[in-house]
Image (tube, rainbow, N blue to C red):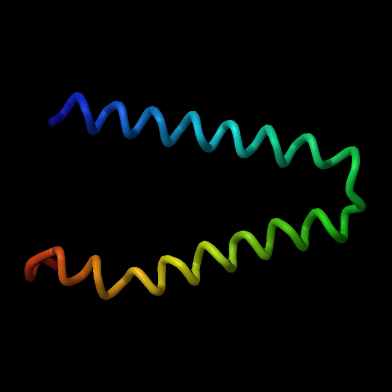
Length: 65
């Protein structure tokens, strides 16, 4: 189980680096207003998804807060 969690951890780092590379590639093609708007929209969407998942995750925690 520990090995699998380490694999998930390293996979998340790799995915983050991939996304960062994709965003960095947009610096040359998009105007700054659109680029920062896309970054802000992504952050807002991620926050909304986490907000929606709050109750299901809390119920899975089994009373641990």
